[in-house]
Amino acid sequence: MSTGPLPTFEFRTVPSIQVEWSGAKRLGEMLAARFAGRRALVVTDAGLVKAGLLGPVLAGLEAEGFRATVFDAVVADPPESVLLDCVRQAREAGVEIVLGLGGGSSLDVAKLAAVLLVTEQELPQIYGIGKVTGSRLPLVLVPTTAGTGSEVTNISILTTGETTKMGVVAPQLYADAVLLDAELTLGLPALHTAATGIDAMVHAIEAYTSRHKKNPLSDALAREALRLLGGNLLAACRDGRDRAAREAMLLGAMLAGQAFANAPVAAVHALAYPLGGHYHVPHGLSNALMLGPVLRFNARAAAPLYAELDTVLNGPGAGGAEERALHFVDSMQRLMDGSGAPRRLRDVGVTDNSLAMLAADAMKQTRLLVNNPVEVTEADALALYREAF
Image 1: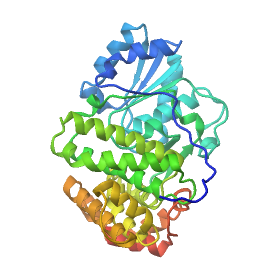
Image 2: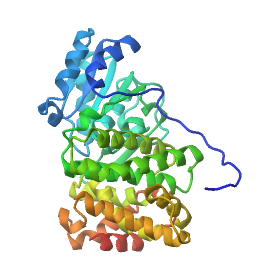
Image 3: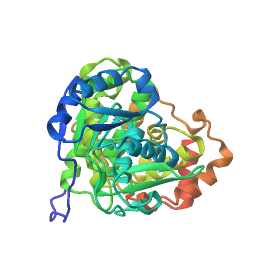
Image 4: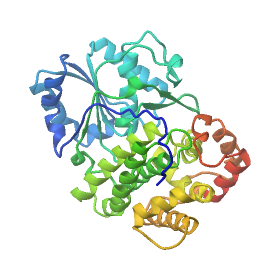
């Protein structure tokens, strides 16, 4: 823990977070008390509709006088066309409030829809950092996975071409209210639980070692997130109906989201994005595949910080910073192995001859790479992909 002068920093997050088991059934009540509009857009995916998660939510909304328009065409790594379809449908229905319910992709689409339904700007004009002008519609987010932390971030990622992704980062993307109802995550399959849980751990670790905006608040959140996630990942993977583990994972993912919204992520994400673009590897899983190699690559430069995280995961231990840092990397490796998630790029269909192309692509993620504790060259990126292969 540093004892130097306090850095100058600003910390932002959403103004209201409600944590309530079975709270989704009361969503209509919660929204009615807070917002005037009654024409709601519900952004979700077909899988959640099929799983029956939407029924109780819609019933609760209707009971409070809401008219809901359901957009359930969100897919993983959503392309721009999905967002634009969503906005078109919402505009026709004259919606006044946006409710995102689902994994990170649904929440990302909901955030951008809330902006595009109000702004004069076209989508290409808002890519990048701080490009959104004006306001958005009222926005409420309800995650159904314990992973992306998107419910509390000011970031949305879209797939913009065959293989490329772009981000919108703007304060307007912070929601008005978030509901964490861990009951919604009970049905999540073990593989999905593992990938999204490791994704959340990556957020905590990368925020803690972020080079530019790391601060005492993001640090405190990242440490607590890692404690909750590391202590409950395997239990949640083993028994998907373990309420205590599910609640800890959802809370941990949210805290990690708050951390990295303020102290941005780095090389793990930069190397993960091309895997999503070229091979449609889900975001959480691509992070899990790249985490081990990047942790080892950063270990010397980040040793004092990794040593602190080792204490969070494993309690106080003997040895100097470098030893503790390596122990931390090994502990993360064991957790990932125990989670049952695929562990090598070749296991998810990545081919050996594409690694150079992936490395060239990763270099375009300058927004993320600048935050890494160690500079990453294209040769480094290629070596990291080879190690993960």
